[in-house]
Amino acid sequence: METNIISSKSQIGKNVKIGNFCIIEDNVVIGDNTIIKNYVELREGTIIGENCFIDSRVSSSGNCTIGNNVIIRYDSIIARGVKIGDNTYISPKMMSNNLNTNMYQVGGAAIGANVFIGTNCVLQHGIQIGDNSVLGSLSFVNKNVPENEIWFGNPAKFYKKNETANASNEIHLPE
Image 1 (cartoon, rainbow, N blue to C red):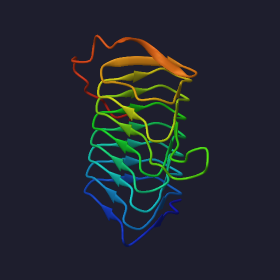
Image 2 (image 1 turned 30 degrees about the vertical axis):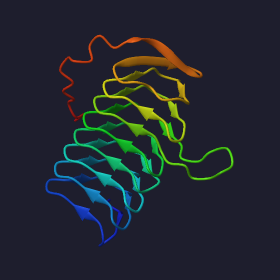
Image 3 (image 1 turned 90 degrees about the horizontal axis):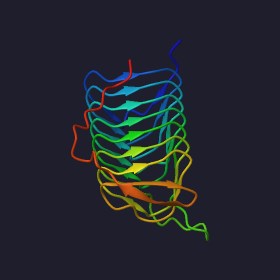
């Protein structure tokens, strides 16, 4: 029972699998070999690279860029303007924001390559997460995280350097 709304102005690559009840708006680009599960909403201008896995109930606010080999797990929210680097893993229920306290759009987070974001993380507007960084579950990240560091807490604070930052970051897509 497939019921999707897919704009004719979207571009969908080769071997892309799209689940049920998805909304894909104008000017969305989905790279080759990407899997989109059920109830996913991709608003205008969302760009997804190749070999990605977008789990059920993920939403993008639009004008987002998601690199290659990225996994975004269940029920995550990708705010307008967020940029996600290659080989990044986002655990379930991550939420990003692009509005400041005066409700002005100031830009989404810039997430580097090879980043791991734990379950229920909240990323404040306009922050930068460096390459090879790790954010612990339930963290509220409201300042920039340099590359190769592990942060967690509310608000998130530096814990230690990421000793495995140069190890193989090969990500395997879920079945």
